[in-house]
Length: 445
Image (cartoon, rainbow, N blue to C red; front, side, top):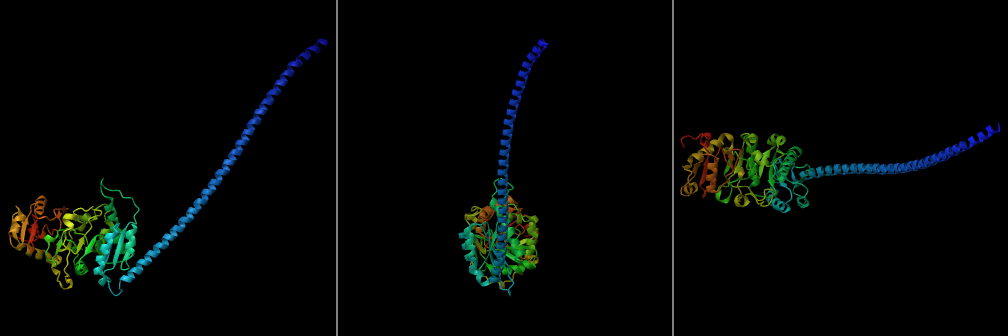
């Protein structure tokens, strides 16, 4: 019995060691768990702190967004108020310049951009002759862009109405190297003409550029031509310009011509023509060459004078002075006050002009195309020279010094392929196309 009790005590010792070991392990595990719990609590506190910081930032951003939206609303309201103010000013300006008892012949718009000094010269020239007929020809300046000098200069004139075209749309040229300026000009023309025809409701518009001076009879000329433009739908527009209007090639300030080539540079069109052109107006470059395409003028013609009623002094501009010294600087602007009201212009209507022109051409003496300028110098009276094709025309035109350029198969200034100019005035030279006589009904000439 004593031996059994001793053996039992020996068994308690290992059990005690096991118990102590288990307690130590439990203590270690509890300590590790407590450390992890502390770390978790710290992490939770950190996350809570970051969450509160993020919530504060979101709240601040929401407040900023609300403030920006309110600012945008205020700006929109200010823009709407400014737009209303501009419309009111335009209406008031029109009321100043349009006599309600006088129906305007045409609105006159000067297309401007960033040449304040040029604009001042042009406006001075226009006002010199427009002031006495202001009710017939309300004057506008349409500025493309926001050049402050041009805007300030335009707004300094009480005699005209200012319009501003702001275009933020990017320009993508069709071909590398093309000037973006011409794309912007085309957009500006469309906007300005839409404004004048559809917003201000004019029946006709005369377009000038900010580098032009006008002749003393400029407005009388266009008033007389307006009647023809309304009556004869085969006339698409009336121009004050002759591409071959250099001093040495002109003589008669009373002479007017029909042409298949759009001259531009001071021209008038009607709302009915613009109704046709506006929806398809080119967004690309060279709107004037676009008008010269047969698919756009559709066989209609243009009136032009022999002696120009505008002078283009714009040596510096989008065209970079192209042709200025040779073709623009020597232009003769009319200085004779022609009484256009007393002139019978019925010969210019479609049903009469072909015969009128054919009769003049038949009287001209035909000469061969070899050394034409030399031969022309030794012959009295009008002469005509037949050309075979475009290259032959260019050779002959070069001999005389007139424009050699063609567009869509038509030489500049031509009527039914015939280009007429003075040479050692008053002699006229007719450069006659291969089928021009046939088109004019001239046989055995």
